Length: 421
Image (cartoon, rainbow, N blue to C red; front, side):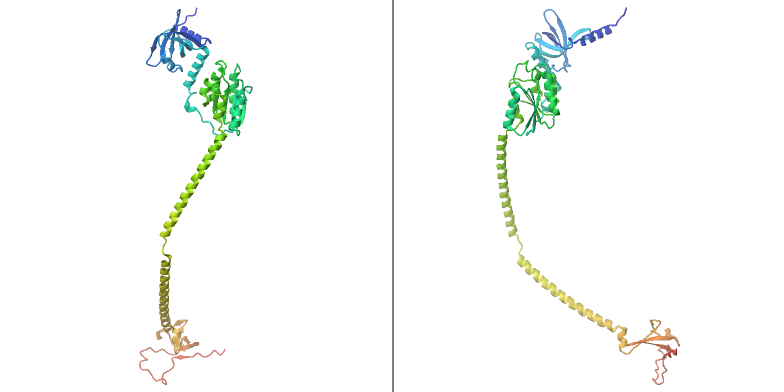
């Protein structure tokens, strides 16, 4: 016999409840009683009918918690959640994630629950919605090729913006294959090259016919699209989850075509107005610039120097400079002439012209009798050449004071005899 602890039994029962496919996705209707709001923000209440009751908890983090703040005791509601076991007390309870006042159909309740879930995840946030391109070149369309929707879109685009190329991704828009078809069409258009914007469209219909566009798979495919998406599902009064997730919602497929493409006629008018405005601005700018230039020329003319007076002043200064230079040159020429005459007076060669001679020994001038010795050969330079002599005797200037007569004076030099050879 196996014996189990209470914890083991409670844990087994909790796992049993939570792995049951029916109990993990459950809608329950009943009357709210014993409602209490904890300081943590969680809601605790009991759903009951005439024969039974079920404890419920709705945590603050649940995506339906905001709508559940309006709950009150005695209110008839429909709640969605899963059944579990609270092990510490052994209480069977339903963990609620969405609650709505009773009165809506089952499909509408599921749509409201999905809306609350996706809104909490941020799929509807305005901050993530992207702007549409102003001048699209390739427009993708995910819709049925058999209906009038695609024809209406093409007609509007051809009228408004024929420069754009329309790329169709065919898909069923209702029935059991519609959800998978719309998801595949959006992904195919994302893989196609150079698609600028995607239109997801279908005509109006009942809530059941529009069910594919209220599915979570289609919503997440639109949310995950790298290309901006325009949703045009149903009529203007129909609002699907696809409309809430898309970057832009159009009331009708034709309106979607008008939203994604500019009107070429209005654009032409706008360009004409811009061209006229630009031309007018350029003309005003040229006129103002011309006036500014003329004003500058006038100011420059008034401030122009008196070139004639300045030219005369330059001529006068040039003449005075030329006269000063001529005077300086004459003065320098006179100084140069004086220096030349002084230099000539000091020129030993000029002395030779007057009958004097220069005595040299070994190329050096002899300026004293003490520099020579008797018998020593010397060279004598006169005006017209040189000749050699030999010293016969040396007399100092003191001995020459009593100058003898020329007849008695012995010769100072003798001319060396020519070599017989």
